[in-house]
Length: 253
Image 1 (cartoon, rainbow, N blue to C red):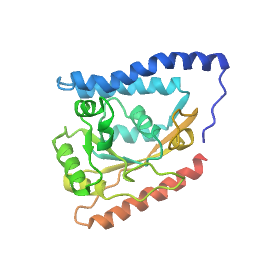
Image 2: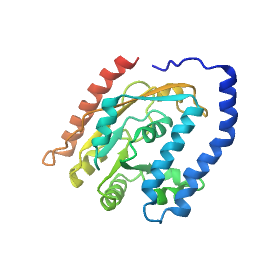
Image 3: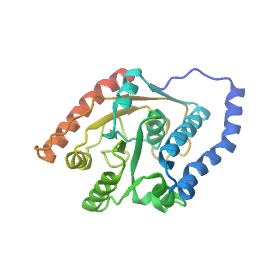
Image 4: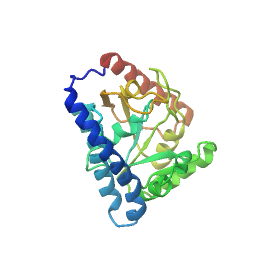
């Protein structure tokens, strides 16, 4: 549901004019700070807290409100090093997720290798601790995530989009097995997150987002059974998330 109170035209104009100046500055900070400062002790924790504030401000300038309830925030605060998974339908999903992660939680993301072709992104990903994967080779991609995540601070949560790419339409896509394999091998829980409204504001191939509300709801942690086949646990996870996603979707529409 993306209904927001209509703002005065003059306020919208002022915010857009400020965004023209502030937007590139915020982007340069998010992209360049890890390149030049990524090796400094304590940088990554400071970086993600600062990036979160920058993203929250960007969303305010864009007139995009992130709606997350107290119960969901409490679940995120209790997550200490477990995997986080979320549905992926829009480029706004990452901004929405980063904006709601509590300051005392540490996160990193898995990013497709194609993004490293964008200027500054390769060095920025490395400095920020983002794990780059080549989706064309499933075994290599999984191993790179396992290697990188196993070396990370145990308090860090790895954020993954189990569908593997953006999915058009209201339904969830089929989950890939990577999140379950990682959870089994590293003995991690999985914290599913459902995102609603981002696709309406910025579907595929749209350059500039619309205004409205993105709703974020955090589900109960999913405990992966290490002694059960990956395919069975993957199906159990898909069913668990899909059932709750569809229930929440009916409420948010």
